Length: 175
Image 1 (cartoon, one colour):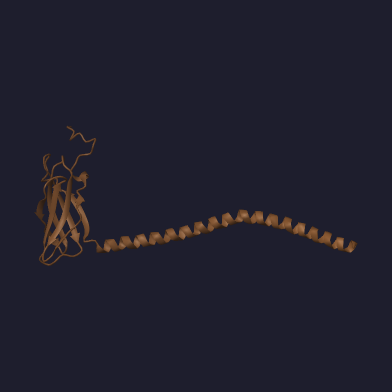
Image 2: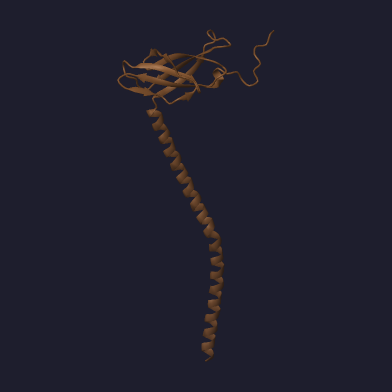
């Protein structure tokens, strides 16, 4: 009988030792699981962000490829301008234009009527037209090509820095 108690006592001791060992391992695992989960989620998030950035870049590239107006450049005409009228040339290039299309610049004060200016063809798909602006207004412009079909750009704002004085501007100083 004594032998049975000894075996039973050893089994209880071994069981107790295994329980203590399992208790500490479970404690370690419960602290490691959130760290591993967090690391895995962080890695997945970085991968996802990278893929989204790539898709965004691809979309932007596709938009640029399909963009009809390739470039615009505003050039102040200081010789023709006076305090009441500011003259500004707009040069632009188009991705494609019908051979006999009539290319125009439309511009207006934000709440006014459109003024149409026939564009001069500089070379190929490059054009120029002049705007006459007042520093008292804000202006919008649109580019238009009319041939067998009509095509127009988005309505854009004329950058105010070309025709409106800076807020601190007091005029020319006398020497």
